[in-house]
Structures are given as structure tokens and as C-alpha cells.
Length: 127
Length: 105
Image (cartoon, rainbow over all chains, first blue to last red; front, side):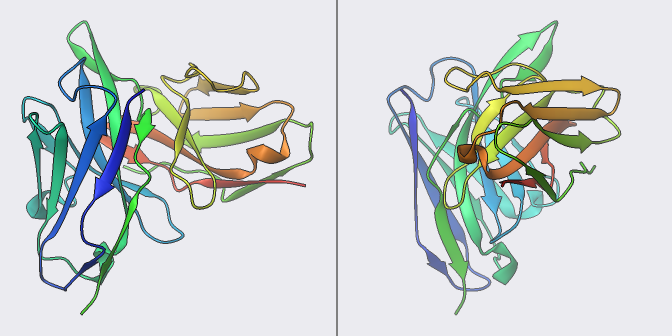
């Protein structure tokens, strides 16, 4: 079955750029209709959705992070990536990637829920 | 847009636990529920209000009424002790509730 694995630096300096990659295994990133999402969780807190990307490259970001976020996809490597610019200590969190199967009903996109998650990677912003 | 959940729910083994999630637009969009145990990634337990993914025990059920969604765990087991998050959509954005800690004692 499909599995996701996040990778990237565990420590980022303040004001620098956080870059993470999610590798999809057990299936193709282009098969089916799936959004590929990034979610983060501050220690002891709830979940915050960062954004998603489709295999075509179309994206949608959380308005609260939109000015600092870029997502990209590399179908040849079966990977998608997150870039978060100008990080501060408030960006310290566990970052997850997840699959979001979608369907269209009368032209409306319906989510099947975030049904596959990576194990998460901890990113600390500190000098 | 915000979702509201009770911070905690306590339940005795074998009893039913109900976790509510309230939001102004819940009657317009589907609701999803996730279970997260300490140190683990979230797991989808209910999607599109009341559907169970493959592999999720049938003691988990979801329902909605007006602007409130409810996750019910029937015959709660000690393994169900976890944080539970509701989630919905708001203008193409995933929105999560703050989470409810379910304690089985």
C-alpha cells in the first residue's frame, strides 16, 4: 500500500528557509485523483494544514501561511516538497505529509480525508 | 473559521464515548475524524461525516446534526485512549478542531 516518508533538515536557522520532501512509495504520485498535503503540529498542540499540491502542480495554501509557502512536485522521483521561507521559532513543529484522495460530484471537489500519513519529521528553528 | 471540541472526555471501558465538534458551517461541508496516539501520526477513522475507512473497527461511528458533528466510540477499549481531531473544509482549506483527549479509566 502507499506509504509516505518525510525528509529534510531537523534544524533551521531563524530567517532562513525550511525545505522538506515527501517520498511516495507503493504507488505513483500521478495515479488516481489525490491532493498531496502538508500538515504541521506544534508540540502538544493541534494540527495545522499548510497546503496541498496536485500532481499537475496546481496548489492551494493556507491563507495564514500563503505568503511564505511554496509547494512543488517531482513526478519522476515520486516526490513532493514544501518550502517555508523566513522561518521563526513559531515554525518549530512536527511536519507531516499526507494523501488526500478527492472525487468530483456535480463539479464539486469532495475530499476522502487525509487517509495516508507519513511518520512526521521534527523541525526546530533555532540558531 | 474555527471548530470547537471539548478538551477532554473520560469514559469507562465498555461504555460509549461521544466527542462533539461544532462550527458554523458544519452543516454545509463534510466532517472527518482523526485519532492520534502519543508519538504517532494521525489516523483517519471517519470520513465524509459517517463513513469508516477500511480497517477501522465498527465501534467508531460518525454523525452530524445541524452545525454539530459527533464521533461515537461504542464499547470503548483501552486502546482507544488517544487525541481525536475533527476536520472540515472552508473555501478549499482544511480546518482542524483543537482536539479532544479521550481517557479510558
